[in-house]
Every structure is written in structure tokens, then in C-alpha cells.
Length: 285
Image (cartoon, rainbow, N blue to C red; front, side):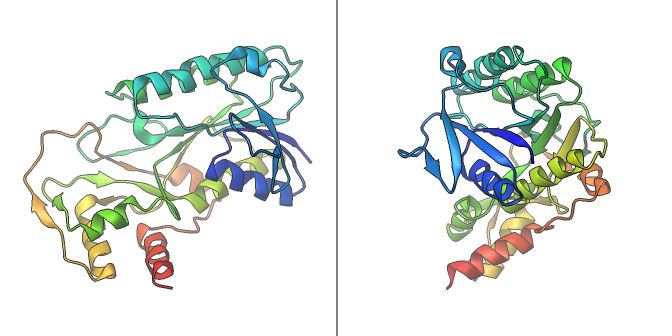
């Protein structure tokens, strides 16, 4: 049994905590605003705002593993600074006091890749984000890896699932979609987000050597036109219309997940068609 800290207990962090507890692990969830009774589904919570070093003073140091799954309050640079600059630095300073620094699983994003021509990217690809928020995520990654090579970066692509149904709403609105040149998108179902994080922990506990970084995205990168056309057909709504070609996009790439699959992970939802078909069918119940 391991003692595990989950920094950031939103939907994915909470589900991860629940799964880990069923496997016998002791879990503490660090959350800025935990449930009023401080306990939900058996999770022990520690109330803290990671952007404030003072709120971390009473946080235990004796964790075996740390998951960092924090989402900024907004998409602006200030919100990302609070998490990926001040927050990370405060946490690293706090755990520097431990006799043995626990290894982290740091949840990052494939937005750290800045490729724009539909290139395939993997863990060895150049990370060259153009926008400031993605640059902050990349700097946080680098801070962790420079400190301890045992930390693991997990780069999620676009997360979807129950409660994350933006594309379904978009498909109902019969939007104009770029068709040519192709604009590629990448996804991972939130169930697989949790599955990947549990899988990597179990690999480490089993003594398997882990790489420092994994791209976590499903098997089916697809163009926006392809995805939206399929959704429209499945939902029996009008097909999208071609959109006038836009200037070069900030990001346009296809994510290669072979390193993760070679380790042995099997996706519950290998394609957007698997995940969205379930969401659409459940919505009809």
C-alpha cells in the first residue's frame, strides 16, 4: 500500500482517488476548497492554495507518490502563472524538506507542442509552444525534470467524456468547419485519463522502468471536419459546411501514443467514435 497525494481533486483527480483507494492505497487530496465535511467518498482532504507557500506549511512530507492534476482558474496568463510558476515552485520548495523526495506524476498537455502542419509528434518531438500559457506548462515540466529524473510527465491531449461535451453541442449548431487544408485534433476519454495514471503507478510499483514522459492520446487523431461530420451523421443533424481557409493555426499536429501502448496500456476508448457513440446513446436514454 502506498501513501499518495493528489494535488488537484477535480473530476479526474477525484475519480483517480476513488480507484486508488479500492486498490488499498491511502490517498490525500489537496484541494483549495474541499467538501464542507472534508470527506467525500472516503478521501481525506488537505485544504491549501498552492499559489500561497504559507498554506502548505502543515502538509505532510511522507508521501510515496504525488500526482499533480491542477487546472488553472482561467485561460489567461495570470491563472497559469499561479499554477505552473508560483504553485509548482512552492510545492517543490516544500518537498525539498523531505528526507526523500517522492516521485511525481505531473499532468501536462500536448499543447506544449507547437507544430502547425499536421505533423506527427511523440515524446521525442521538439516542444515549441507559441502561446504564453503553454510555455508556462513547458517550463514547469522542465523544472520537475531538472530536479529529479524519476518524475514522470504525462501529456494529455483534449479530454472529453461526461460533462465534457463541447463537440456535441457544437455539432448540434451546424457550424462551418475547416475542411482544407486538414486541421488535426487529438483526444483522450477521461476514463482513459484515470486509467493511464493508475497504470503508470502500478508499473512503477511492479518495478518496471518508466520513461520521463508519455503522450496520452487515443489511437485516432482525426481532422475536425472528419470528427464533426461523423458526429452530425450519428446525431442525425445537418452536416457541417466547409469553412473559408483560416491563417496558419497555432497548433495542428497528430499525437503518437506508441510509447504508452508499448508499455502495455490498453485504451478503453481507442477512438473518438467509441467514446462519443456512448455519450450520444446515453443522452437518448
